[in-house]
Image (cartoon, rainbow, N blue to C red):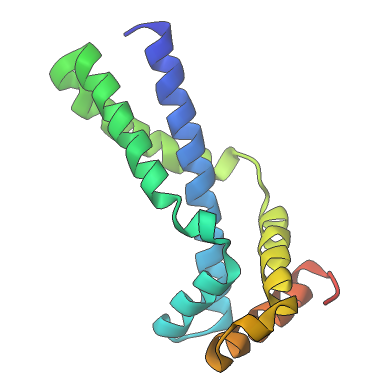
Length: 144
């Protein structure tokens, strides 16, 4: 493997770690807010910007690129490297920045922006938006 291959794999692992950490935090927040799995999913959609909801496709493409780089350079051993990359992603997700506080502020800003434009939403979405906005306001200490 060349240095470029290592850099590509490292960047993919770091981006995936940040994505995983962010997803885990939004899952934690929604579990605290509601015991119902259906409502948790709806709250997660309300709290996240649309680009983040659709970014799973970018992450999948990055992992396909990583797999291709590993297959093209180290052949069958790439399976072990992929497993190592997944483990590294899980470990790095505890280390990489954004802190939980900054992620909570990020989600508060998204919900607050949507809260100010709540006339664009259905009554059910508006209720979830108000619930998420109030909870994140208390969690972050920021005012509505």
